[in-house]
Image (cartoon, rainbow, N blue to C red):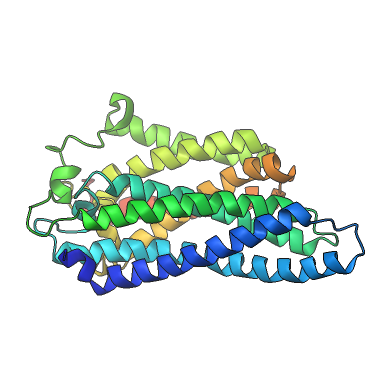
Amino acid sequence: MNNVLLSNEVIILQSVGFLVLVMQALASVFGLYIYKKWDFSSTSSFQYSLEKKAYLIVLILFFSLLAKIILLPYFAFTIDSLSEIVHGAMCAAGVVNANEFGYFLLSLKLFIIFIVGAWLIINKLDILAINYPYMKTKLIFASVIFLFVLFEFIIEILYFTHISTDIPVQCCSVIYGVTGNSDPLPFGMDMLTLLIVFYSSFLLVIVANIQKNALFSFISGGLFLYFGYYGVTYFFGTYVYQLPTHICPFCMLKKEYNFIGYAIWGSLFLGSFFSMVNLLLKSLINVAINRYFLFSTLFNTVFVIICTSYVVVYYLINGVLL
């Protein structure tokens, strides 16, 4: 058997993931039944019974989808721990790049967390309302999420089963370094241009949030997420490591860097999520929540402050930039 599959972290991840999948499968099947029969205006005993069942189903969905969010940082921890047994890997970068499924799986997980977050918001709004106006929407939405989670689970199995502990993989310095061929700066930018676009897109997010325009916020949030990734990986990350040749989005998740990567990537994701989620909410339930524009500004600002502070502190201590 593949040594990767015998890793305690992988066993825990797959076991919990399978349990979540089963819970979502059962909840989705019964949820579709409730979706077809639901009529809140009815005063029949059948509708009353349906409401009690719906409460249980929604509760199962809530905890299973909440577990998906918790599993994301644990997935990052898992692939980082595998670098100890995957030959050539110095951190999670080499493990993710070990086969063709890695980066696709990571992107899929982030997308699922985004739509799970949207479902949790809709669920909260539905519970706070008197007549459960979004019950049908959140049940059918949960079924769609289940299909993505099922697909993710299959890809995850393929990913772990295709990681070899015998064949050397590339380390992050090769994957992202000056000799690497993947993830170059976008659109042929130089570093100065990237930084100008990085801070400009941040200001664009602020303007969009002030205007409380869901579409504008979605676009600006997506742009900032994109350029934020490149900014951290190729510029700000080097100040975290204090080494200009150390280019990696994963090493900052390690203990020796005080796990700062979780704060950096977490604040960027949350900022982008709150920038973009209102457009999805408007599409699904015709609701936009103004305070989410404020949350977007808050988390994106925290992200920029953390990144910028590493550069400023390094310059104040050393008197030069990397």
